[in-house]
Image 1: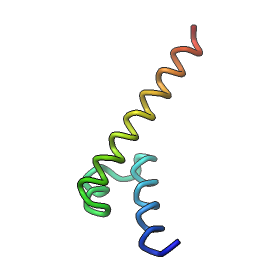
Image 2 (image 1 turned 135 degrees about the vertical axis):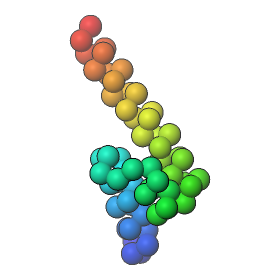
Image 3 (image 1 turned 120 degrees about the vertical axis):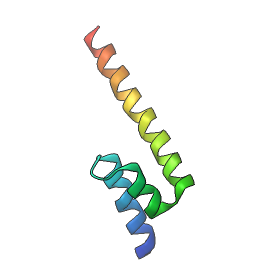
Length: 57
């Protein structure tokens, strides 16, 4: 894995862990890729919330 790819992965990881915000992510990886990551995060978060709700039933 190249240094650039590793850096991109680190920035995405920081965003997913809510250490950095969307603007910092977009600045690092580009707006289009940042939008894709944000959408994926929203889907993951929604899935976790649904799983928690189902576990309570």
